[in-house]
Image (cartoon, rainbow, N blue to C red; front, side, top):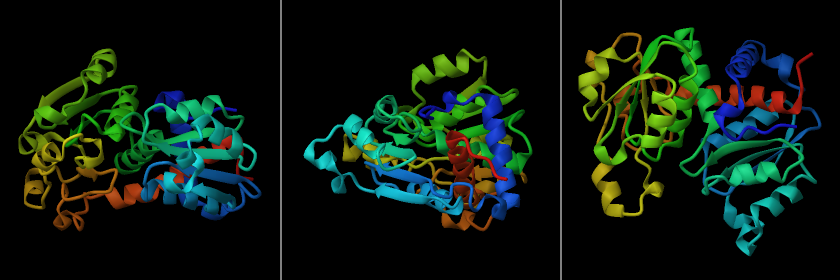
Length: 306
């Protein structure tokens, strides 16, 4: 039994295999429609989520399995003071695999240490979000045909953005990746990620606060929202939330084959006039999340299509 708490829990070879399975699911959905027959996924979402929770649920249903769980900590025994460890042990009695989102960093790790069934981290605070990273990698792979030799710009909240932290960590293991970090000073990528990932892996990177200046050189642009829930001060959030807004006008200087990604939800950092641009891939990215989660659920349960 194994869990996936951090993207580094998966080797590059395992990620490539998951992407291959996801691509086969996209091409041959009927082949996978009963793979998880009789299996149950517990979705333990102690923090609000729409896309991730629905994506996991759709993934399990399309594999022929069942879903149980909760979408709000207020409807769970956590309100009575039950620990994550005890909740996990209890859920072990009813389910075959767990997807957990929690506002506290490390909670899914604690769950995995108290579980006899696989635990998938569906996001823990500002820490990790490995299945979003797998979604991002699948989307880049499908659009670019590779996961190497391109320049990716991360724009917006690079300090608290767990999706950014996870994707940078994953891409650092591929060759020829150049990273451009675009943010205001207050939302820069944490120094420990620069030191432990970028510098350690010898990844070429630049930092700037000017999106237009670097836009023409990007092959991939990863936009993020400024997350209100990560700020202690409402004033600071309001001051920084509109730092970078991508518009159709700004995209005139970008490459024709640029792909624009966003983990969603967006607030206003991508103007709706960008949605019809063929370079906008964020809704397709959300769809890809279902397919890669199907592949991961199968892998952790040790199941294969006939």
